[in-house]
Image 1 (spheres, rainbow, N blue to C red):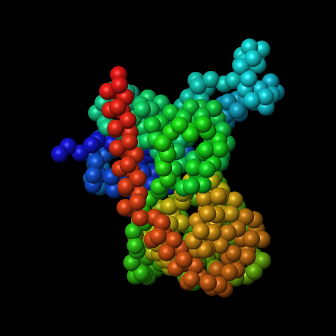
Image 2: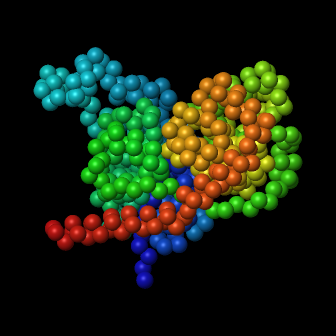
Length: 423
């Protein structure tokens, strides 16, 4: 029997790509190939800051998944993107007043430029990148080749332009969170376009339902399954990176957008103010100026096995981001029975910690100090780690996740068959 063909579009893809949405896409693709014929449609980029086309164009296979990479231009200058973003938001008083009045049609007769049209949104997305025109053209030309299209992450050109090309065949996983671009008018259109929406958490769904007109779209909530992890610790990984004594670990892109600036500032102040002997280990690609301190250790991009061992040996994982739609690394830490320090200002992270009782929340320097003091004093560390483990095992199973995907794929396929029959 022929496997149904599914195309997954994501801005970057591959085992050497470090990013939450991209890792999520890889996990999902490698599970879906057990049932479907899966093709990844993506860019040639490794680095989202530049979109430099580093990987070869064309078709490759990785872990059984077919990957089609399309050429694209490097990213526009940050100055150009920032200027376009400010223009797109509408900086003039008459534009702000138009939004305040609730966008009445009569107002547009007086001020036709008060409302920004779709072309401005596409223009911003093209500058944001990666501008994979060939990818979108491929979707147009091969629409009938695939039974369904899955688009991951709302923020980038391949998703927005691709989704608007085949909305009737689309399952959209927006990984939406409360940030400035989410309020751009173009995303009202993309969020209302697909046949189905899949949210990673209930918090993401609630936020999206409040911001977008999506009541007419079939929706579901599912993220990833988390497999049980061995309790075995391998000291050679710690020795390899020269880590001594107690430490907390950060895993992911080291970036101001991920809250790493505040985390590093709080941590260096904590060391100075308390004199406690603790190290902060940072695993991932560094996108910031490195902080030179004997208690801060950068270990760079690590393998999945090394990441697991770094988490297992840590007193706690720390995640300082205010903007997360799921946070895979929190679930991975819980699977290792390691508690988590997380930013309370992110609703998704707050839900994870409060629902699991698997760690501590902080929102400023004082609450950061308190949380880290508890970690260092071993206040319920073991119990919180077990709580996190139980939370993951009870709520994040592959059976549930894959059943949800199967249901949505069936829904999209059957809905399209019905529409064709009615025609």
